[in-house]
Each structure stands twice: as structure tokens, then as C-alpha cells.
Image (cartoon, helix red, strand yellow):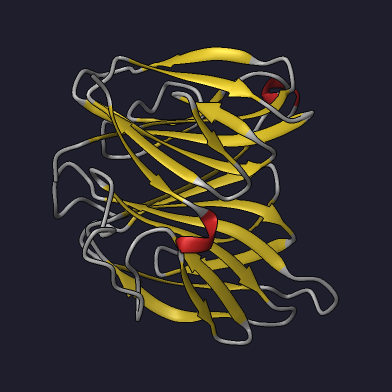
Length: 239
């Protein structure tokens, strides 16, 4: 029998700093819930809003795979590896912090906010050489399809990280019904609803709800609204 853990949108940690409003699915910063520290190697899932003209000053990371998925607006990135870039909706960014890296993120627009998902995953080993990558996703391939946007393989679709994890993202119509088949035995799936209503393993989910499923080879997905946008994250369940 598969096992599940349900995190409703309204139960997330809420950190409102004015310039930054962040919803934390898992313990982060001043929000600590001993029952919500991680899902397998998925350590952070933050739903961030950055006000116009504001941003994160230069700060350090190490031994973490950090994935950013923009949902609205433009987010400027600078890091100690010499990378300077802007990420927008339709992009995905990954930074392997490894032995240590510093970076900043800034919303240079004066008239509109930035909204993005910040996701942290523990790498399979520590002390790796830091790296950065960013790609533009194939927008059309996401229509009524779960498109792979991340994997452990540099020659596979999407960006890659130092972990046996696979991410898929899709904008699905109301008649969409499918099963996500796990790529690696022992992994689990954390499904996050960006918009719309879906039924996963016979559990109804709504916007910004999250459901973790493990001890299963596949996960059923049924769209209940006219449209739904979802992010499916397959990750190892060990620490």
C-alpha cells in the first residue's frame, strides 16, 4: 500500500517581510514544524513573492541543489562563479552550491512583483564543485503533458542535478487522466498544485496544496477543473 502525506496550502508557514512574502511547505527560517522538515531529500519548497525593486542580498549556500522556477516577473541573478542572468516564467534555473557559493537575486522591475518557487534538494554527496545552469522550457510541450524539466543526467531533458531526482511540469486540461510511473525504485513523489483542482491517489487537491506519495511504483493523476498546472517532483526518500 502506498503511503501519503497531505499539506494543504493554508497550513504552510507564512513569512511576510514586506518586500518578501514567502509560504513555506517545509520548515524554513523562523518557521519550524518538526513534522514538516523535509520529504525525502526534498528539503525546501518556498512559494516566494518579491516586491518591485527589492531582492535578496548576497548570501552563501553550500552542499545543496537549489532550483528556481519563475512563475511571474523577472528575477536577476548574480553569483560568485561569475554568472549574471535573468530568469523569467518559462525558465528553470539550477545552482549546485557544493563546496560553497554566494549569490544575490533581485527584482529590478519597479512596476511588478516576481513570483517564483525556490526548491532545495540534498545532493547525493557533499563537497562537489559548484555549478550553475539555466534553460528555457519548451512551452508547447507542457500543454496537456507532464514534461520532464529536471533529471540526474546531463544529456537528458531539462536541467540536471547531483541527485536521483526527476521533475515534471504540465498545464493539463480537464479531461487529463494519467499515472506517473516512478523512475527509480524506493523514490517518492511530491506533487504541488500551481493552479486548478486535481485528484491524486483519490485525494482532492487545490491550488498550492502538496501531496507526498511513497511506497508506490506509480501515482494516479486526474484533473478536476477546466485547467490545472502541476509540478511533480520524484526524489529519493532517504536522507
